[in-house]
Image (cartoon, rainbow over all chains, first blue to last red; front, top):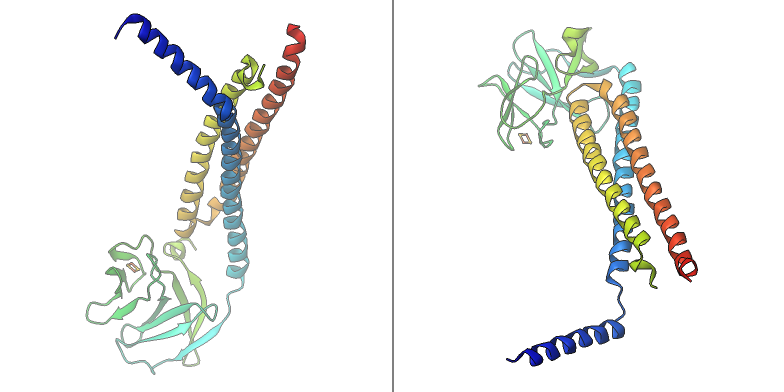
Length: 183
Length: 89
Ligand code: FES
């Protein structure tokens, strides 16, 4: 290819580019600029959503604090009606909050929230191993204080505080792992 | 000449890019903060909710400030850009 033909083809292609730009007058720089601005707005929106999430957590904390200060008293079973090694499901503190009452031995009863702290499957009591087991991913919890023995659950099971009065077992509140020792 | 080709426009675009980068950094911190505070709240550390909300609010205010700054820069650039042809004439 000769020098002049290369030059003429370059001139032609730049001419074509100019024509193309005139016919399709999309201002790439301007478009990019607007996109950046929109992206900025989008980021601000996400930031607002994060802040809203944090406020939601704060509201939840305040509501939980109000609820924690007034736990209802609710009869959950009559002492002796559950056999040793047996368990019973009851609802506490709300009608949707399933809990598990376990008779560990002749005189000892314990109760925990039935909701696994991993992905909320219902835990069951294994009398043979004396532990609470989650069948979903084999998460095990101690029957003594609810702490995680093995598996993916990240937190212990919340414990239901019980009171024996007049031969009846009464739920009087809930406590989390480690909070009993603080009190 | 076209406004977007002007130097001021380019500078404004660069300023906006810079503020966008800062926005991204603030946002990453904010996402991490929300994740960490929810995790520790669920683990029973209830006292984290308030300071985390305050900090998140401050980060949001920072993001808002950066966005407003970028918008102001843009407006100033547009003003300067529209004056350019007259100045050159
Ligand atoms: S849901 Fe219980 S271990 Fe996964």
